Image 1 (tube, rainbow, N blue to C red):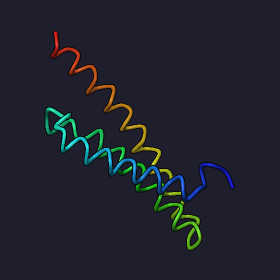
Image 2: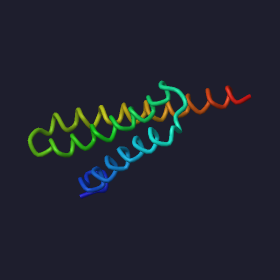
Image 3: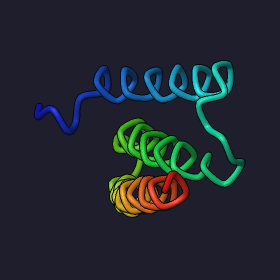
Image 4: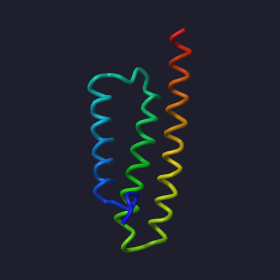
Length: 93
């Protein structure tokens, strides 16, 4: 079993994203409502990957589709993080 197929690592990542969301809301680190898009996309990537691992026993095709969705959400999360960083950097100056 590879690290990518580890259910315990997927659950750990899921809990880490949940903690990140709670900390971001409680500490008000996020200044605008649209900046939550990065956290949402990261949550969806982790959730889709976890669901893909849990569904792999029942349907390999559904697992592959959910893993592809997780990949798309992950790439979008990275792009959103870069865009938010650039916009906040431009707003600072």
